[in-house]
Image 1: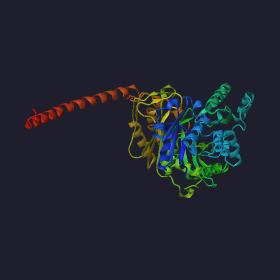
Image 2: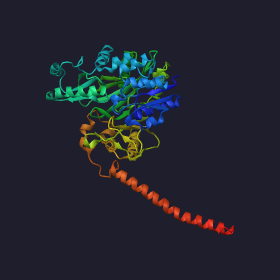
Image 3: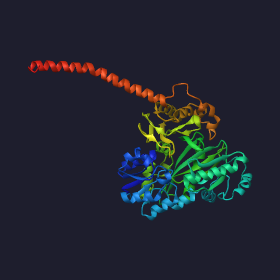
Image 4: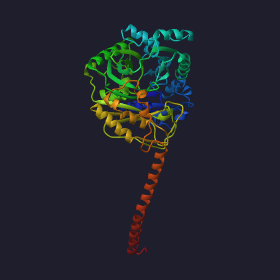
Length: 502
């Protein structure tokens, strides 16, 4: 078994991986930028090494620095988490060249599925239906107008090496096309080091549904059912749940079969996700494959009862899959809310800063994957997500009620957060009924953005109240201590008199 793993990531995902490693008796190595010196993942790891300045291009994306630390620390394997280098084929190749196990798929699979254009061709050859779009990367801007005329507006401009909503632009008017292309290319270059983009037909009001898959080195591939990921803002997921409210047994069987076929077409090893769009008539289309662990993987773990990180490690260690498709079941219902340091009322502008107070929810069926603590300063350099709040219950209705309770208990001061916004989603009648798609936030925008009538304890008010409570507690303790001290003094004097000391 692998004895030591370097986690080439930060924040909550680094911590989440380390926890599974500790349960398996595997030592962990953290890497951190100058902005993350005080981050929780640095404290939790068995060893930690500085790899560069705050900007990710100078730290978490520095392949040579990470490999150097792996060798220096004696780490046998590297787990990339998600984002950063997790889908970088050159990094996977470099790990292999240096004799370090890359906990993820082969470079061939990453190249075939990580590049969205190549993935589309692969899926077509595997008989999986795909979203209409370009068959090549956009090289010449002069061809763009002609391509869009063939596909028809609206369209989505997407980074070929993209993910996480970066390098994406929705175009509904022809006049917006060129600016969208340039903006997507620029953002893609910064995020992924590759400015290649392509064009895809945009299905307004479709469902975004993904299937979790696992594959081993012996050709075994299974799926762990679906996740509903349709509640999105700026093409980034906000709330995920499983099972999907729209899923039927027949559709689940067809989509699961297509997901397994997609993974088998590239001899996939490890954990991955096949993403689909599903229209109102329950027709589904391949969207893309993420050749890594997903942010929303905990809801699958909770419903299926499998630790995906442990499976990733076992597969990388050369072990066969522990599970058979016919033995897997979905038990109950799970929901995940992404808690971000951002201001929904200001177009979800990031809200970095010092966390003055944090009170996390607890209780039956509640899980938090986070990394923020009181006194921690959220950096400006990275994604604003600070935790994932996951709940499980036997029914969807019970899971929604549990999430409402957990969000009510979740208090963070010092920075703006998305907690109140998420509460409004949970209280929305359409969400409660399971009647929603990717247009949900746009449809209910005014309602979701309204100011809360009650005191907003997410900001400075909470800090003031917390300080007053702490001050009052100190006063109470001092007040209680005075009569106790007087009693002790009296007893001591009596003792002294008896002994002739006073």
